[in-house]
Every structure is written in structure tokens, then in C-alpha cells.
Image (cartoon, rainbow, N blue to C red; front, side):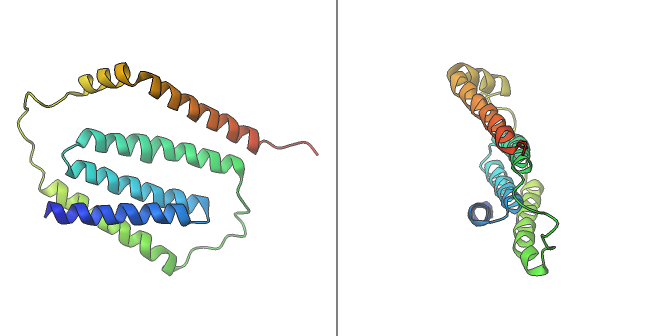
Length: 162
């Protein structure tokens, strides 16, 4: 059963990512990308990595998507008053993907049994110490890149005097 869930979620992840790449409207692309992130988090949970699944939801589906929305709103991609309401056909595929993710998470939650604590499991503290000691420079570089992206979005989105 877990093997089938893995492949179903993998297909949802790939489809969501492809739709995010090929979507013309940036807000719709973000919705597809969030769908992909949630299905990827369910895959991590299925692979017995709940901490990574939690990071996937909190960091990527939460913080990074807020940053993307901030950049899109700053750049003002087009006139929203001319945009029409999506029809039923446009809602069908995201609804199907969302139902697949929710059913998969429900099946995982119903069959999840907590295992007794083993000595080989790494704690959150050990993970954080390893992450910041070994990869501290990389994390700082990534945070600087995000800062530069926000400053660039502000620069590009500012109104110029006529």
C-alpha cells in the first residue's frame, strides 16, 4: 500500500511541478507549486522522515511561497480587473490533485504507528547542530540571496516619477 501511495504522490508532485513551470499566470503557478510541495512533504513523511516533511511544509510551502507572492505583487504582472473567473474545467485538475494528496495523507495518518525511540535516531538538536556547523556558510549565502531577491523586487516594482 505504501508503495502505491509513493508512486501516486510522485506523479502528483511531477504534475504539479510541470504545471507550475508551464503556467502563464504567476499566482496560479504558485498554487501549483504549493501543491507540489505538499505532495513532496507527504512523500517525505511516507519515507519515515517527518522532520523533513515538516520543514518542507513550513519553509517551502509557507515562507518561500510568501516571498514569491511578495515579489509577484511588487512586480504587478498585469491588470487583475480584466482577469476572468476560472471555469469549472480549469478547477478540475487542481481539485483532483488536491483530493489525491488529502486521501494519501489520510491513509498515511490512519496507518501511522509511533515506533519506540531508538538510539540511532537523530534528534532535532543534533540535526540543527550538524546543519549549522557543517553547512552554516551555505545557509548564510542562501539567506543573502533571498535578501537580494527582495531588494531587487522592490527596486523593479517601485514607481518611477514621470
